[in-house]
Length: 132
Image 1 (cartoon, rainbow, N blue to C red):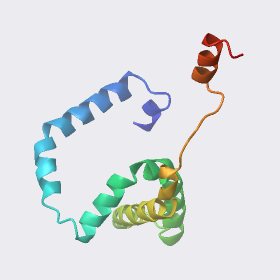
Image 2: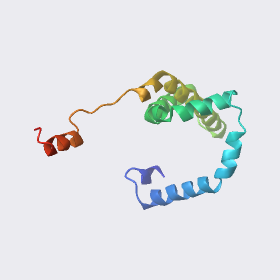
Image 3: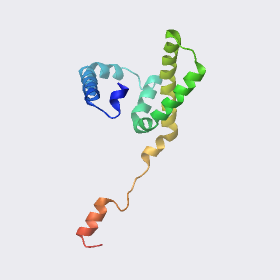
Image 4: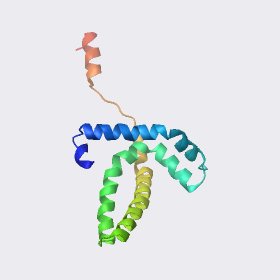
């Protein structure tokens, strides 16, 4: 699917629509499973962190994944079904941990005030009011 993603084509569009349909179809079941996770438990804390800091995680996940692939190839250089399964488990656990760490370290940037001076809207307003 990676070949169809950049630039996106019709195959990727249909895949994305099918994935969203599956999510919407099973949303009540997914919601009930997530509602059953106690807020104070470790999975509940991770889920809350990922919900609160999703923009930070989205921005830094590519760097986390690249780092983990390099680290996984160094730690487990062999290949085979057992090693690949071990790598998959390693990648999952390490990705959750590294993304949670990135959210903790860099999540404060989501709350920074953003002001754009000289924006197009500002210039248009000034022009209408004759302040140019």
